[in-house]
Image (cartoon, rainbow, N blue to C red; front, side, top):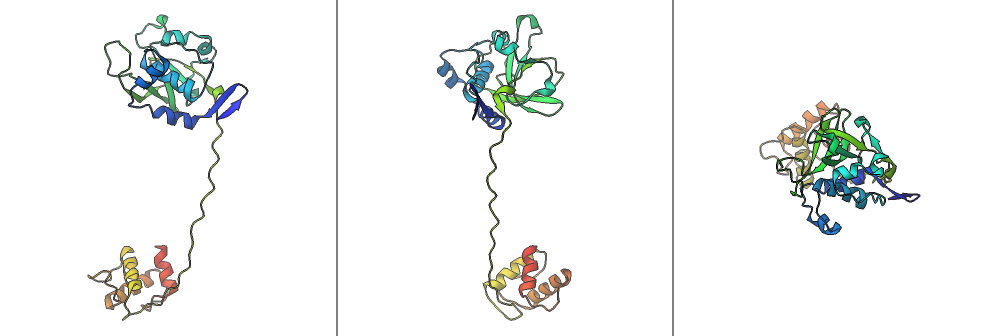
Length: 248
């Protein structure tokens, strides 16, 4: 979190991660926290803006229409959905009557350039008109010109675009190992490793595959590999041949 005067600013990415944690969760914990029941969609928005973004001056109004008519909301009103960013609040008109105020609210979690994705509480599958907690929250996508969209509250003053510092890259590990030069007639785990490398690169080493015996079929596989990689074709596996195999 970053403090700017009396405003605590949070990173938008962190905010949307917190928002997504509410997907599929009941709102009972929030109802107990605020000591009342109201529309789940608004309760969810209040939690995200007040508790996560820590917007202290956010009014404690518990209906979409009353919240929409506050000075807080009106001062940040914006109808240009192309400008919507993570954390902005979107009001909806679901009953076709804008005179009675908003009927639904959600939080922007993404903008595709032609539509916005909004995290909403209990928006679909409820035809009863009772908008209390139904233990559903999900992300829905709307074209900028969808008839149900009303307007957004621009919350940019409460968010910083500053990213968390990237962790220092971990350098790739390097090691040096001594390997013996392998040729026909030799046996051992290093021969077995050679056979596996050849096989994984598409070269046959015989039906026994990784028996650890450098036989005629393994030698033939080595020579085919050497020919394909344009190194000396001698059937002997030294540093150069091993190096090419590890590159594969």
